Length: 189
Image (cartoon, rainbow, N blue to C red; front, top):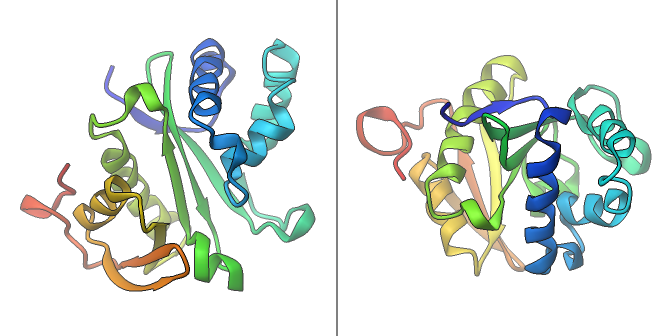
């Protein structure tokens, strides 16, 4: 089964745990601005139990249309899954705060370390752009990446991202509805 973006599900529990171990091993939990890092710190001790994982899926799954505690904007969380294999995640923030405008953008994504360099990030972003535009009404879409993350920059540019500027360590790109990205109007790897 080819990978697809889906709402978070308990079906991929074992694969999700293995992916989180990979993220921990690479040091992701130490990142101060990352949603994934925050979730590793907040939920990591509850994920192994089926009940804790189900609670997590209910909390982050799908779309939150309300402002969340701490000023977090409404967002949609989707997972990149092939069968029962968790490959990555993507979050679409429905609007931008000043901080998100400068550093976070509308879309954030992460591919588990063992699945990187196989085109998953490009495919995830390609799948998310129409959803952001047509379902959530976000156009253009702001996406940022660290200035040292060459792979993410290539993904964003392959999907039509146009560089605007750099703010501290973050590169900022806009992708509008007219972006075609790559050959024949599709994002290239």
